[in-house]
Length: 104
Ligand SMILES: [Zn+2]
Image 1 (tube, rainbow, N blue to C red):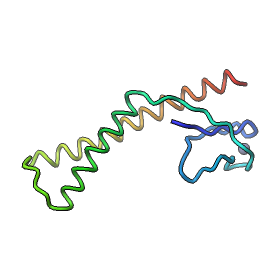
Image 2 (cartoon, protein in one colour):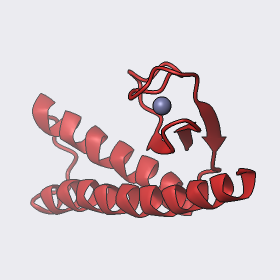
Image 3 (cartoon, helix red, strand yellow):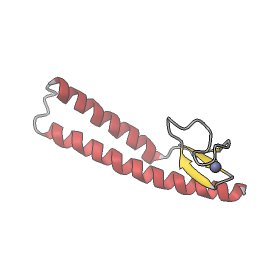
Image 4 (cartoon, protein in one colour):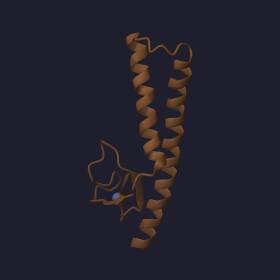
């Protein structure tokens, strides 16, 4: 998990695809804060992969032989992935703030 931190605005936000290293508020170069991914992060990726794969099979009309339970697994995996991504973001944001606190 990467965060951009602007020392000027004290603005900390998770790195996203449209973010190119400049502060969104003032345009200055940001400091990159890297927080290693935890088990939550890995679970999030694993579960969203499972959910997305099952959704793809569902859309293609491929029968996996799971019957009705495929819907529970599919939605369960996607909902859990959402929960884990939230937990991971909370945890990494907190750690990033702590890291910045040490830097300053
Ligand atoms: Zn800034």
